[in-house]
Amino acid sequence: MKKRLLTLTVLALVSAHSVANNDPQPQVPFIDVINSKRIAPTDANNVSQSNADLLQQVDMLRQQSAQREAEERMAQEMYNQNVMSQQVQTPGSKFLQDAIAMYKPSMSLEMDTKGAIVIPIGQGLLNTISTNFKELRVKTSDRTSVIESDGGTLYVSPTTSNPVGLVLYDAGVPESKISVTLVPIDAPPVIVDLKVAVTKAMVAKSDKYLRDLELEAAQAKAQTEQVSRSDQHTQRIIDILTPIAQGDLPAGFTLTNQIPQDAIQPCRMAIPHRAGQRLLSSREYVDVIIAKNNTDRVYQVREEMCLGNDVIAVGIHKKSYLKPNEEVEIYILRDKFQNERATTEKRRPRLTLGE
Image (tube, rainbow, N blue to C red; front, side, top):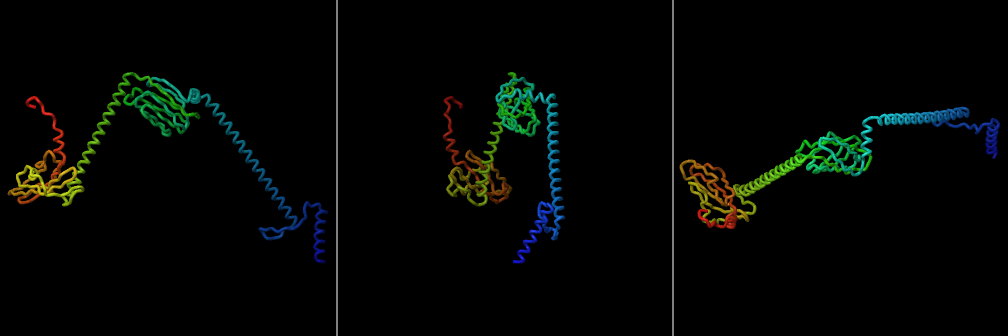
């Protein structure tokens, strides 16, 4: 009880001392956490004052930085205004102003060949320019815009605000050139109907050029198809005769020894030969001929010796030059329906003599 009263008395004395010295708060010592030592009340006041000074300096620096940024922004705005005011007096600015003034979402324009025209278009959007050219050709040095043509129509999507210079002409008619400058502006896309004053001679020259192109394309296509059919035909022959030469049956073929009498000795050669096998499919025959050189000299077997109206191909395995007593197999690939087609394709006989 006495200890508790003593503590209260000490606290009361400290409070009374603070009031007597007009201190804003009791001068209670505190611990410096970083250095782990007790700080006297007077030193504590100095630290508090130092912190307040630092905060005030930081606020002052922030205010100065904000003021400098504001001054720099104002200076940049004034500079931009001066540049813009100077550009207004330049030809480029008038060029742009004239383009903006003529802008319409839909325009119909006319011009002569070898002339020049300025057309405002929507920036970053798909703009359409239709001409009276049969097949439009486009030349440009612009590498950023998306430019496509279809027939006599031009599609342009500019990606920047820079003007796009184009040279347009009808295919095959270089004298129909025109110069078109497209000016991208902040506006909706345009649809332009551009009519060029071409002569009748230019139109005829364009028509002839396009006809020649179509003819060349048709010839190239026919040649490609012919080569393709020829390749397919050759591959079909290889696919049939290769397994036979290897002692096998091609896919879709069956083997028989029943051979018509007129196909037993089908080749025109001086050495004995005879058909010993026939392979059948739904579309072809393959007769396997065995030939033997019974002469006392080398004999050459040639494919053309076995050709006929229904023969598709002739193959010789393994060599065509036979020494005395040597044998060779000959494969004759025949069209199964050749005779039927020949019968149905007969024409009406003439009534006049000699035909």
